[in-house]
Length: 192
Image 1 (spheres, rainbow, N blue to C red):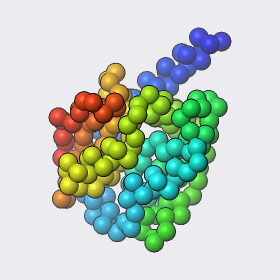
Image 2 (image 1 turned 60 degrees about the vertical axis):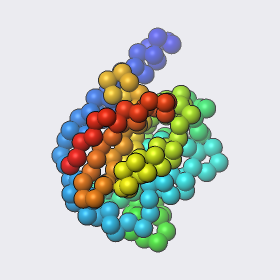
Image 3 (image 1 turned 180 degrees about the horizontal axis):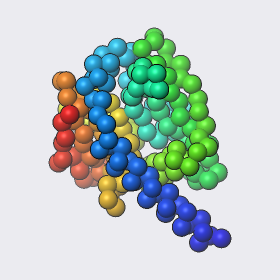
């Protein structure tokens, strides 16, 4: 039984890495997102801080367009924190408009395989690092003098990283930071 869970876990991690890779190479609405971001009254850091109360921990965060084409700020979270494995945790997403004075996100508890797998991978990666999402956001914004658009713990091949998108001027720059904070992986910057 343990072998079956290990295999399923490994398959979920592989599927999530593939989905992340495909997502980053997919359709690009960066220019529209950069333009819309100017209307936001909230940052990723403030949303992460709002979600991370008690034992709850933010796993990733991003600005995106919702299903209606409106600017949305979303944060994936693990309700019971990083000390509780994904199987026994509540994995969810907070999402809502960042254009209001108060960010009042709706809550979705993940039940589908794609979101559960992605959140489980993010929870696992964050559980083995001492570097926080807020640490990486601060570092990326300081280095780029821009605003972080998205941050996700992920696998780049077999290497654990923080994948970060920053708005710098009117461009989106994608960077990779080492999950353990001791080695930067941001030698590759892609501008959109």
